[in-house]
Image (cartoon, rainbow, N blue to C red; front, side, top):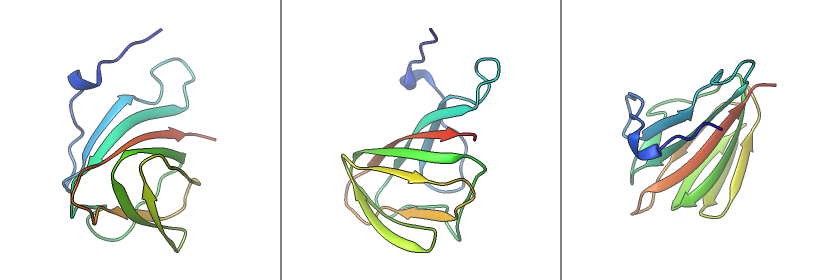
Length: 112
């Protein structure tokens, strides 16, 4: 077993205001194809700041607190605490926190 204390993990450098932590990077074990972490999107922050993002892995997310407005695959969504999302690999997407509180998300990237 590998145990990580999220409070001791440094935040990844980002151009936007989101506080991203990668808790388990891909390859932490031999042949590993999963990345796992958290992100806090503060009020009025957008990720990415402009345009859309995409990655080569499927992205599974669970909203722990708050709400985000998002667009994925050309469709708009509002996702709130207690809801989960799946963004297929390669699908362009963005997220915006229009609320007054931080939006806390747990995410997992899974290579196919």
